[in-house]
Length: 154
Image 1 (cartoon, one colour):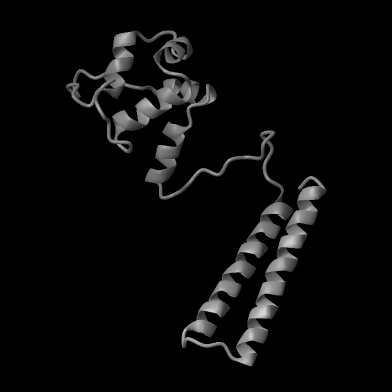
Image 2 (cartoon, one colour):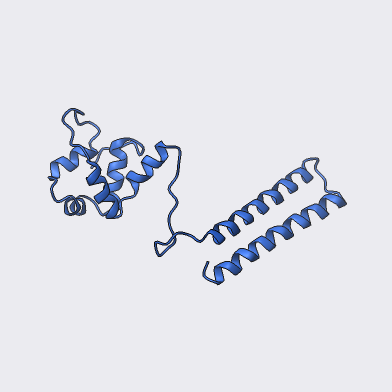
């Protein structure tokens, strides 16, 4: 379509979902019971809301199964949440991997905080350098533990 939909509007989210699975022809295949005009109505922001086609929950599920994540992402965003993808094979990411990643991020944050505090006055002193080295070493160790787990397959 030539109209530009707002990406977070109902029409914009629906249009993004259609694009995610390959456009109208693919959507027509997934939603076999729908007519082309009804699909256009779903993404047309100028359509009279009382006459607009409605997307049923069954339609939304069918589109999601076909690879359209935009609808679920929008609902998660409206709830103040964010979807987290599963591992590459569809299996949940192992808890150990999440724990190692969290530890690495924590250590990195602490190191950045230590550096920022140390350079706030525009100079580095011996104790500050020692603290920074300790923090950077902690980051390296956390990163090594994460890499080791990844090499073992998670």
